[in-house]
Amino acid sequence: MSRIGRLPITVPPQVSVNIQGSHVHVKGPKGEMEHTFPTDVAFALEGNQLAVKRDGDSKTEKMIHGTARAIVNNMVVGVSKGFERVLEVNGVGYRAEIDNKKNLVLYVGYSHPVTMPPPAGISFETDAKTRQIKVLGFDKQLVGQIAANIREIRPPEPYQGKGIKYIEEKIRRKAGKTGKGK
Image (tube, rainbow, N blue to C red; front, side, top):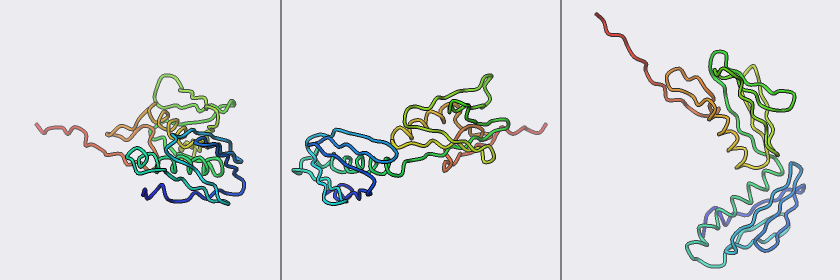
């Protein structure tokens, strides 16, 4: 049995879960999400515990069991608490700010500022003192993808460390060229 798939999901009181066959709809204070799973897995809601069960022991059923449990758990956590991803802007003159339309504006060494509008369900926060960008939302996959898109605008370079990186990311630094003595 899958070690992840057999763990029950605790549903907080402010979150409602609606199960119709293999379709799961989760609604909470931060938003609502839904996902349709293959018919290999079944969901059982008992009190405030949600269990993911599988019918047999075929390879595909085993594969989808833990994945389905992880997706539903991320849905429940997302609509109740939300997710965040923190990025850091490094470099002289590099900065990030929010304009009046809640768009993220990045000044990262290009001849023009780069503007990113937030998609539905995503919001940005910036801190000028620590030079951090927070991507907030209830969909874990979307938060991670938007953070990756922001990092892709100016990825950190290995010689001086300038660019946009995740807060927990370590940049492997390279030594520059050394001059030969004459």
